Amino acid sequence: MLDFIYYPVSFILWCWHWVFGHVFGESSAISWALGIVFLVFTLRALMFKPMVNQVRSMKKMQEFAPEIKKLQKKYANDKQKLAQEMQKLQSQHGVNPLGGCLPMLLQIPVFIGLFHVLREFKPGKTENYFFDEQGVSSYIDANLLGARLSNWITQPVAELNVNGFEVSRGSIIAVAVPLMIAASALTHLTARHSVGRQNPDAATPQTAIMNKLTLYIFPLGVLVGGFFFPIGLIVYWLSNNSWTLWQQRFVYKKIDAEEAAAKEAAIAKRNAAAPKPGQKPKPGQKPQAGQKPQAQSKPSSPIGGEQAEPTGGATARDASNGSSDTQIPGLISDRSRSKKSGRKNR
Image 1 (cartoon, one colour):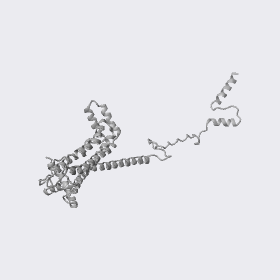
Image 2: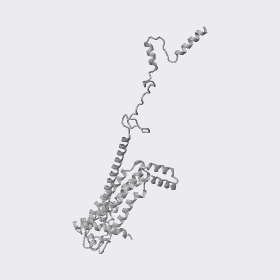
Image 3: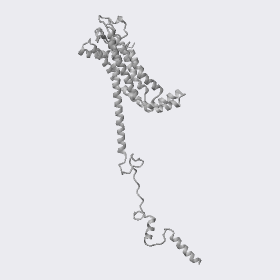
């Protein structure tokens, strides 16, 4: 039914096992373990760009989270209108909500496919998708510190002793439990790093619930699931979480560097467009921060271009010439008129 998933997964695993089988031996557990690890690396490398788009989409959504809160408060009783406004807001900011889920959705069929392929490595089978009978026997005989990659902790006792290869449950526990703990710890560290990058202003009750799930429930699920997963699948989980943590740090660091460079370029462009000290700003241009506006020149006298002398200057010259009366311009003619009119009245 899902052969379109099983065949590609088994083919990539077959290719990497063929490569490492020439180095460590075809039936070596190291060859099979490295084949599983590089199967993960191959698939995650193909999904690298969607993962980067996911991080950018999440970052954009955090930037306009306050607007989302306003819409949720405004249309609290109208879910249909809220959905329309949310879609409109996301399209304005160029955010695709499905793009953030794409990497996770792509990992689900890979996990299911690998789980099925590894479980199909059973004694007596002549083929397992791209693997022939020799490949099946090689996987079954691979010895990893006394356990097989197809063993799991809760495996029935009757299945532990097949093909004359004696396997104790203690050996399986000794190999599986450290891998389970490491995979669970990496799941927690990845979630912790992601939560630490979130914007506190964008926090919602739903976000708080999801953070608790990713921080504690998911790592616990990996730890508990290890009792029922084959060791080969735990190796997949460990390598997948290791890649996720590295990729997350690498992508976030790259995006931070891009934002810092864009900010510096914007500042340099603004400084280049700003007037130099002492230069008159262009019409409509604001003065640069820390720069005082240029002082306006004093108006010049209409005669000869010289500055007009204040009125008090004339009074001071009259006082120095020995004049007893303080002459005020504009009142001299009035006094002379009053004297002439007084003489006529007499």
